[in-house]
Length: 120
Length: 113
Image (tube, rainbow over all chains, first blue to last red; front, side):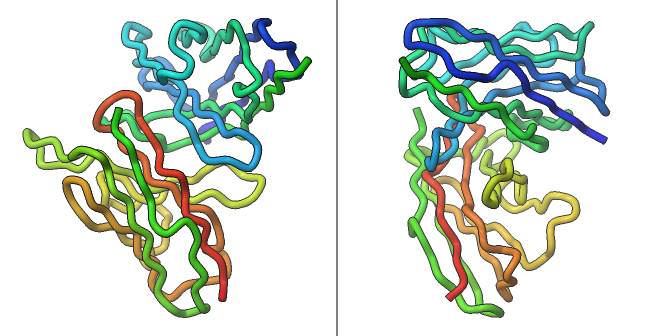
């Protein structure tokens, strides 16, 4: 079955960097668009970034543009989110998520999430 | 960016009754070339990731009970849960995937009255 397992979260100081990973299994990873979505504690969902199946198209939320980079390694079935210049308001659970192969950039599967805490 | 606004923010409904949640987009999410509304609904229970309920505004995801239905077009959409069950207690989010950034509504908390 489809599995998305995030890792790399933790506590980091403001201004520092962190890289999240998402290991995908149970489907043909290289055929699917992927996303990162975050949720601050007690808050709603915020779409962060998306990447096409082959990595050629990338999109970002305005709040992370220029600081975060989404990428993928289809040979390793892994999605990444490089987060630089982290701020307090980047504190959130970060979910890795998949778009369906049939079209449309909605999300049909979600990982369990990894918590990133930005604090001095 | 397209702004998604849900109403109400919270809702209490008796078991067996109907729950209705609204979602309004700041611009149309209807793509004229295929006549599809790029609007989805998710359900999130405490401590869990969101779960897809409906896509293309009204297409039910596999395995989702038929008491969940979606309607609307253009800028105004509705999620309806008929015959509310205890397991439907959750926060519900709409999201547009018409254009990036793919914005979410603020969420509607559904409780049992």
